[in-house]
Image (cartoon, rainbow, N blue to C red; front, side, top):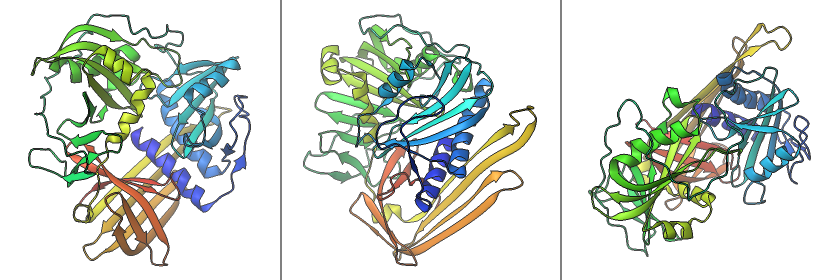
Length: 462
C-alpha cells in the first residue's frame, strides 16, 4: 500500500502536468456532498484508473470491488480551511454512515440505503486529493466501530497487555548536545548517528532542533523533547485490526521498555474520517529516574506506522502546549535535513508499482488485471552534470502502454535546501530538496516548486 499510494499520486500528477483539462466541480454525484470553491474534477481515463487501482487494493482487504469513480482536487490547506472535519460534517449531514478503515487513516467506507462507497482523502499544503469509488458489493467491516464515546483525558486505564511474541527492550540513546540557536544547521559529529547525512543538526526558525539518531529523530525545544520514531510496518495480524490492539502493540514496543507508569490514559476509538491512535501517561524514566509526562500518537498510512512521542515536564505543561490533539500533526514535518554537494552526488533510484484485479460488474467473471509501474533514476555526476530517466507502464496486463523519458544537462545545489536541473533543451526545473532520516539510512525528497504534486522519494544506490 505504501508504494501504491506513491505511484498513483505520481502517475496522476505526471499526466496532469501534460494535460491541463480539469473541470470545475461544486458537488459529488456519487455522494451528493457540496464541494468547496476552487474544486476541480479530473475525468481523464488514466487519472481515474490510477485512483481506482489505489481504492481497489484497499477494498480487496474487505472483499469489495470498486466500480464508479470520482477524482477531485480541492484547494490545499494553505488556501482554505476545508479539512477532514469539514468533510465528515458534509457526509454525516446527508445521512451517510462513516466506517474508518483500520490500518490506514486516509480511507473510510460510506454506507447509506444499501450503497457502499470508499473514500480517500489526503490533505496537502497546495492541493488536497479526494477520491470516491462505489462498490457493487458490501465490504466486510467486522470489527470496525463507528459509534464510540468521545475522548475524555481524565479516563484512566491499566497498562495494556504486552504483544506476542515478547518485545525486546529498546535501547535509549545518550543525550546529544544541540547546536547554538543562531545557526541554521551544523555538520554531524562522531557522537551522532547521522544516517549518511552530513548536516545532521537542523535548527528551525520556531526554536525546534532536530537530530537523527539510531532509532528516531530527536527534537528539542525548551523543556520539551520529541522522538519521531522511524516508520514501522504493521504486522500482518494488525493490518485489519481495531484501534486498541494497534495502540497496545506499539506502546509496548516503543514506550513501555523505557518507562515506569503511574497512570495511563487511552483515547477510545471514535467516529472520524481519520482514526486517531493516542495514549498518554505520567512516567518515570527507567534510565535517568526523571519524572515526566509522555504523550504518544500513531499515524498510519498505507500499512506503515509513524509514531510520535512527546516528553513534557508534566501533564499540565503538555496540555498547555498541545490543547488540541491535532496540534501534534506539524511535528511530523521536522524530520528534515539539508543536502550538500558532497553527499548528494551519486546514483539515486525510486521504483514503485501497483496492480488490481478486475471483475465484470454484470456477471462477476474475471476481466483481467490492471497494473502501473514507474522507475526513476537520477545520476548526479562529479562534473556538475546529471541524467534523470523515467520508465513506466500502465494498463491491462497484456495490453499495457509503455513510456520512457530522459533528461540530461547541468545541475546546481541551491543552498542546502534545493536543487536546479537544466535539461538538454534548456528547460529549468527547480526542486525543494532535503533528506529524511530513516532506519539505517536516508531518503532524498525532491518536490517540484512549480508542480507541487510532482515528488520523488529516492534512495541512494551508488
